Length: 290
Image (tube, rainbow, N blue to C red; front, side, top):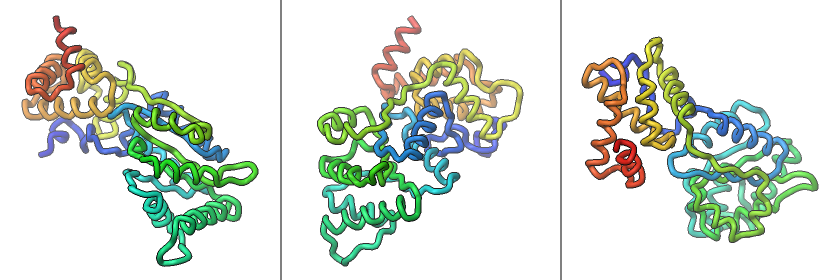
């Protein structure tokens, strides 16, 4: 029997896969999603969302796609790995994913650009649809791909951008963009997603447990355990999910009733002793236990 069934759950609550169903919408996530939808509606063009590893950018992107599916008038696509060695290959992938017809079997860069511009104009002006392109891992973009995006942002009517572009990337994307003033000037919405505070960490854990089918009125994680989880993970959702998964697995194996602070400390100490814990978190835990 799966460990989560032994814990009174119907499915895995702490998977690190970017499942929108398990996306806990804290205030900053709700505000970010609402702002992005507004940007799309107004056809403002470029939006940039930054954040450290594990803060939830990819899941936010998947949630955004889910929201667009529920709304009429949107054409959208999400690029998960924007690593292209040339501008031609970038446009090739874009035309393929958007199902854009090309004028020849061996199109030039100009052919690609013209085809994309015609497609975007037809969607925006003739069909009155909004085309959204979401690029995850945007910090992997190279200079050639960024130039391709700059070209796309030049496509516009008198009152709207033809393409709504969202860049989701780690913090190293910021200095890359700052070297391109002609791209930075086009950013209509920008934000930095931050880790969760203690209250939000508690809400995330409870939300995921309920979504996974936990129905008991008795808490599965004690308040002290949640405080220890937040202290070690520093509020990063991916780290929270991984530590909670370990705790539930141990709870099922030991036939325990709840995850307490002692169990979390034991799991964290094992991780530190194994050498798998990032030095900063290991130092913080050791200092807090002195």
